[in-house]
Length: 458
Image (cartoon, rainbow, N blue to C red):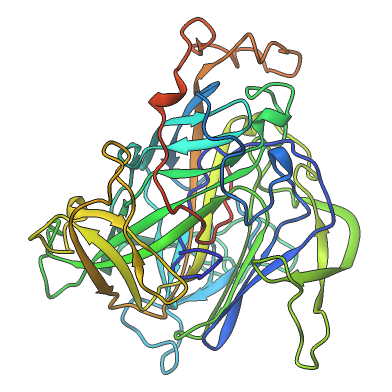
């Protein structure tokens, strides 16, 4: 899903980094049925002046000067997000009381009004960044674990289940830990990912400095119901497909309304910073312009440019913390679209992710655009299908924790080690010794953003 025609929203903060410049904060808006999706970019500007809605490379991908990978981790129990009420899946929030009240939101994925804990062990491998800060991750290098449980921590109760005294900041007891949910999800990457990484604007990508960035790719998840195959065999569930899924490691995301009429809000936690420290500048509430995704002013009911009073925040404003060195999170959200056009292997079905060749862009008339095969220069062959999502209109917001591991750096380009912690360069290969040809890293087509704010924690 994307900001430009927002659909779903699950984001992964793929070791996104940056010490990029700042500007006036902007709130980017995407109208949805019965509400809107808002992303406050904190005034963060990426390499080459790129913004939250810019994902294209500057001059094409010119070969990796950084290679890294991310592995998701169990919840570290630290989050800047306020607790929220969560329902057990298949309960109707319109008619039932929430099952999990005042729920701790760390690593919590919200679907409709329901909650799922993001599992450890999802991997994002061979993540390529060039000297311009262009990001590239291959489709097959993004592998997600299965979602099937909720870990519930009640922030209003202490470890004994008694009401927490006023002013007690201590996170409280976990209840229904690893409680199996009724619906399970198997996510898939359905395209390569591209975007930008602000690590090129720091003194060194391995430095202890605030870093943030973003990528986008086409995304899908297969949903499994209790009455179908409980072993969640691929191809037996219900495939939900979202075009242009975004991941970010900065900003504030709010999902308001939609068919499920839910409200979720989350702050990013920037790489190398303490997730328990809010990234505020101390300036208090500031009037912030609201823009459409094309950069034009969003208008209020009277036709005037719209502004919102929000707390001023900035990347790195909370300070870096060596205890959280190379810690990363991801988060994003949006609304599941009604339909998407996809290109299938001829004679196959939508249910198996391997049979989905591409999720298609559409022209001004809504007709699917067949991508060009980079090897032949001809339109790709296959069956064009208009896929119907069974969870159309449902809100979706994901959070997860992870660790970022740098595998290689071009030390001839990144030679300033003054801010690199002791041991920070251990095991990192020197990419300047073996140049990586630009042609080795080819981008897919039609990639531009779902939603996403990526969060970071320990």
